[in-house]
Amino acid sequence: MLAAGALLGVPGTAQAAATTTVPGTVSPAVHTMPLAGAVPSAQDVTVQVWLKPDLAGAAAFADAVATPGSAEFHHYLGPDAYTARFGPSTAHARAVAAWLSTKGLTGVHISDGRDYVSATGPASTVQSAFQVRINRYRAEDALGGTTLIQSNDRDVSVPAPLAPDVLGVTGMSGARPDTTRTAAVPQTQTRPRTQAQVTAAPKAPACSGYWAQHTHPLHPAYQGLSTASLPVCGYSARQIRAAYGATWTDTGKGQTVALTEDEAPTAMFRTLTEYARTNHLPAPKPSQFREVRAGKACGTATRGAAQATAVNDEAEMDSEAVYAMAPGATQLMVVGGGCDEDQALLDAALSVLTGDGKHPSASIVSNSWQIPLGMVPEKTVHAIDVRAAAEGVGMYFSSGDTPGLTVTDSDPYAVAVGGTSLGVGATDNRVFETGWSSDYGSLEHGKWSDLGVSGGGGGTSLVHGQPAYQKGVVPASMSRVRVGKRVVTDRAVPDIAADADLDTGLLTGYTESGSDGKPGPYRTMVNAGTSLACPLIAGLIADAQQGRKTAFGFSNPLIYRLAGTSAYHDVLPVDSRMPQQNRAAYLAADGSGGAPGVDVFGSQERAYTEQVAAKGYDTMTGVGTPNGAAFIAGLRRAAS
Image (cartoon, rainbow, N blue to C red; front, side, top):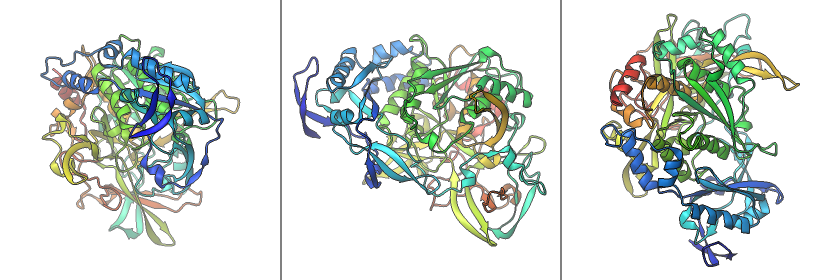
């Protein structure tokens, strides 16, 4: 689509009198949101113009190096070698940079791997350059309230001569709601419970040390259930290790796991040391943890979605979950900067991939975050994931804490990690495990109200075709979707899963930040979500890579080769023959005025989610959850 535009001086080209829109650079949801006004014209905005690599050639190479039996199997490229072979040319990057400068933007910078060109300017200048308006819109947040988001109002436009080299443009968005949510989720399921909260009731226990240690009657019955277990007070490292069969033979020694974050934790190494002590794990060595920054700090108080709903220990949970599974691995925490949370996280991931030019900074990247569909161009995420696969880096993404798909989990070169509800018994035995999809009922005035379903993300993409590794594993009922008038076979999500339900979460630690800015005392809280599942899987992958000459890299071809074997626990739907205490969790009122409630596990209500749990592959848990030594040995055999 062409539109009239101002004359643009671009080196190496004649002055262009036309611009071309770049599809996919605005979320369609914006057009349905009430306008709350324009952003101030003087507000600084930093944009990234993503450059188009040879995606077809890079994807073919990535497939070859990730597929056992290929002549190129595990013959990865270094970051600079990838850029030289598949990246955009220096000339194209300089042309985009020159155009941004002519439009009055400053701080023009070509990223290390030539993935994008960034620039900063007042909103008025950015709007003029890309022929958009940057507005604020009213949107509904996860709890049914109203929040403001920032977004361009239409797809951006760039000079026609440059358009063939532009993959997408990011940076104009700001704080946003979780747009993948399909049902209202109760407050008790969207905020972590602190240890003080779960032990507040002195007359009766509010939680259990292991599954079904304490139960509670339901009066009246809810969905046919007359009893439920109290949620766990937070599993210890010992319990979660036992659930997935982590061994002391394979601890991830010699491996590096990168953790991408949007906020830096307080005194992380001190926190990790205390977590290890209280969980009877070996003390971490100073050389095992390093924190680095990617991107510039935001100059204003406005940040992205993660700051819209505060989570005290997201980064801490990532680090501690990896440490619980792989206490011998080295951790690299990469904290993204900038006022646009999505871009900050993408920068953190790219920082790992560009590394020192010769090697990426880690071979395993745990990304415990999601970007909703439409918030960034899909091709930008795809380009990052393809680069990672070609370099031998496994990109593990949370499938999200709401039903449905995200930009980040649905890419075929991402390992999407789904969530489960997990019962660990008194002897650290696996009591049950099912797909995390809980129907929440609230008890008020003696009557139950169904408030909807909370659970992990998943489903079938409408954009990406079925990758070769899913053929013969994902049933047609879960891979075939209607796109327009055609029925196509597409990419299904997730690929693998682990514990994610807050009712069966991990007891995590964090260090409070004092009013004087200095680290305060160590605290604990129960936390979960697919943000927990993702680093648990990353830690087990580090265990499996221990002692190997080459990394697994993009591991889905290996993961799917083991489908249906003892390498996985097949996560099955809730069965009416299961004891009632294993089918629901009772949530006592915490004294803050909220009503008691109950989470009924394994809900598959079509009103809330199109996902299902089933024997074999399913769209809640993928091929299943890891089965310890069998999982590790299976990956090693598949990679031989």
